[in-house]
Image (cartoon, helix red, strand yellow):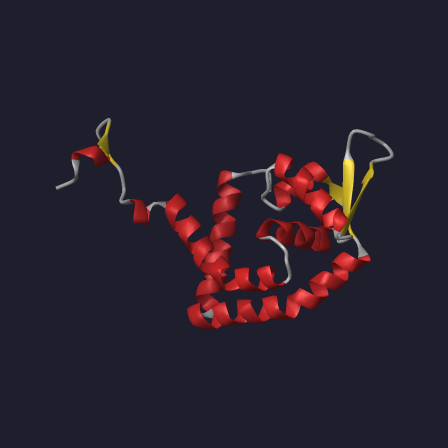
Length: 155
């Protein structure tokens, strides 16, 4: 029998351990538990790492696009950019054609930083892949991209 509090307006709520939002968060936490010690050892947050990785892959871009691609709220990105600039990992400048926009780029020091951390990150990823299997990891990645594409046509 379903507990009365799990029925709302005639609809049964799924067990929270089987809901997509909880499963995605739980899986993310399980993965990040492997990467956090590495990031901590290099004194960089998960969000900062995402920002510099996006810049490495995509090159210079405006702050709003960077926030979107790094999955970070714009107000948080503003503070983060200041911290990364203080470490000389990124540089920002005003867009010459639109002075309201800031353009963010990875510095040489930022590229060197990524090159230093990347081998350890790749080893962690390889360990995860060995544990879950290449096929499952590829299928999961493909399925998550398909889910994101279906739910957000802005990709």
